[in-house]
Length: 139
Image (tube, rainbow, N blue to C red; front, side, top):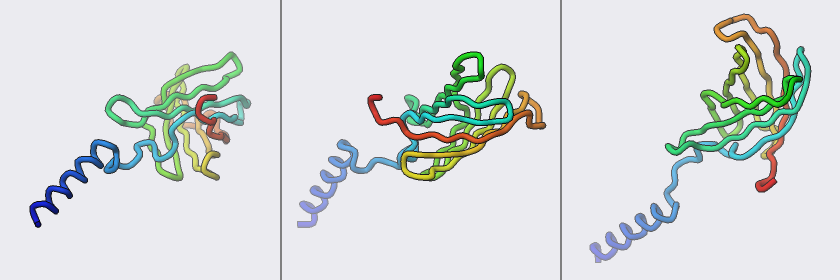
């Protein structure tokens, strides 16, 4: 009887592993997909978009798209740290380094702050706020 129970338990565990029942924690902590919104800073305002996904190793990666006043820029998000309630990442463009922090205000909406510095610099040259909502899949 013990042998039968052990065999059934092993088969159940194998089935869960094959069909995703024992999946680890979501590496995106629920932030997966495209978030669209806007930013406002001392140097201006404009549309903003974050896209979070995973790489082939299952690690979080992301892309930011934003309007700098001279058209839309797109750059990879560096070092994304995602928790159920917060996001922290960085990006760089045109010799600038941007630190981004935020939190969910609801399941599919978030808001946060950003600080812009010259790459390698300590002194902020701009800062502001951002808001975004998750775009429904397929849109």
